Image (cartoon, rainbow, N blue to C red; front, side, top):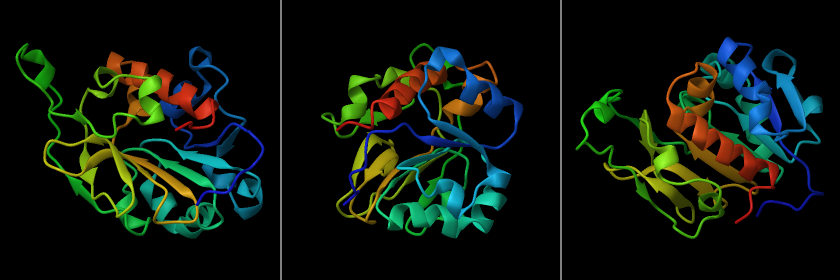
Length: 209
């Protein structure tokens, strides 16, 4: 199980894009991280003291694949890794069985349409910080839920759009196909901004159950 460290806020990896720059540095999200680390400078030494490391959405998957060992070591040593959407974790994170789905960007134009996401683990601590509506804009895939892990947000096709896995590794993996940093930093999809505000408060508070 994930080891206990003194309370600290996450280290977030910065891919250097305009949407990463805005979303990570946006003061409206609060002081949710301790350190912002550009991916090209990330190494074992720079992440050694990080109890929580956030891989934001749309970080370059080629870089992630080339540095997979660096990120997997976070889980192996008993710490927490948060991996967000469009980072192709199936390429670099063992067990991250993602099934891509056609993305319906415009379903919300029909007043009677529903995206089909559902609350998985209703008692999970994340729900104290946001609602299902905050998580509902679109999604790019869903994940197989490993034995012992829990799905926080269920996909209509089966599988999970956001899962919390404390069974597969000594550490804790939060894995989602949602991409809120991208949308918040690109100034569209208000639900993504609402999601990110709640999610970042949850991170800042230490990912409580």
